Image (cartoon, rainbow, N blue to C red; front, side, top):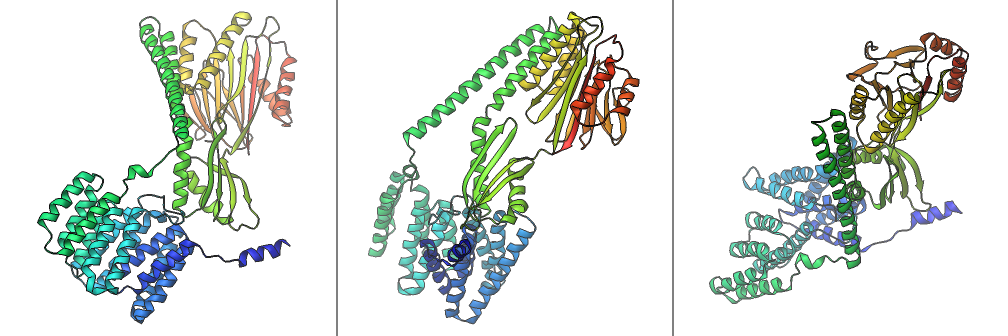
Length: 622
């Protein structure tokens, strides 16, 4: 039953209004005998191709068919031009270049070839390619006309009016000047001054119609049409100075009527008051929250400047808190940032001829985005080869396809979910064995922040309650700094100041950035960290670094590229090297938790003089 339904749907054919309009315009272009017909034809085919391939095929078919009425040579010229056109388009696609940016240059090159064929090696042959390039740039200045049915932008409206005017000039050559004047008047009222000037130059230089005063008047009218008073004053002055006959007077009266009837752009945009009020309220709330955060940041900055003369430690703490508040104030922009990204990405995808039905960008987890898009005309093979790389470029992130669903009986319609590509997963576990005399002075913590996993150990100097209080203080302050948005190196510097003043505790931190595939190791008077890679053990400390594996970013701060199977062992100063080697020889590598538990069981066999803490983190591919 499903196969039968598919066959029926494939065999169903329908003609839309835009298809008929495209065919009608193509018939006019194919029958035009003007030297401008080739340039206008390629302008329209490029325009149709960027809308839908269906319209492009309709336009090419009817232009070729109707050009046969003019003879075999024009039809052959069109066929050769279209063949070159689509071959170059295919080459651009093969090279994965932006077709939208190449279109103006492609059309200009083909226009230049036909211009030389029409005018020879003459100055006139240079005018047509330049003017066609200007029109193409103006035509491709926005995305709104792509995949929008009968909607055309101002440039294409001007080109269509110009084409119809040329057709009427050939149809009734006796009234060529009158038709040209009325056509230019309509173009001036429908388009901006830049398009009007370009088409007026085409008429003056490339058509044998000498209506210079009327062209100048229409150009001035297109400039002044928004200012109706100035436009009417110009036309009244022309009524007294310019007309020599009744035809010119009628033309000026038509100009006046057009100025009075034309709608200004301000009146064409309407927004509901509810939507406008909602947007204003949301923006005001966001702006107010951002201002409050910035005010708090300024307060902390002022306090930091005051305490700079009293205590460096307090001053740096306050300065870092000021930076964190400013960071969060800037991050508030993401409330509206994803909406702007959604509009930008949708326009870009439509520029690549994708029929985007729905698009949303969300952040289901902190630091991880998810893009859900529904496209009605994409092949399944293009999703990985074209769509995914395009989204990565537009959003500046490494992405992966999470889900693809296609709708039955709707060929080419796919619902695609894309999310951040996080190549590594980190499994970490920690435990501590206290000394045999007092309470433990070590503190450890493992927590996630955005796309990172942070492991840390703080060892209070000595043992007992005082050491435990110091290590907990250091751990809590550092964790809150990281979550507040203070960079790891700045937080470590601040902690170093605390340690060097009156708080006696060490700090050992590893921050695994899973999306970048990098581990950042920071130490403040801490024990070495051991990297277990490929049955080798590497010691990471400030005095001896393994060449080619670990790079030292700054004193006590190191960077390591993650590799699947890596293990990172962090210890406090109550553990000795012979115990580490003994554990490595007897462990089963069943899991991170089991390995840590086996290590603690080994440590408990010996009476501990100092607190002993272990953190083990293992890197695996997703």
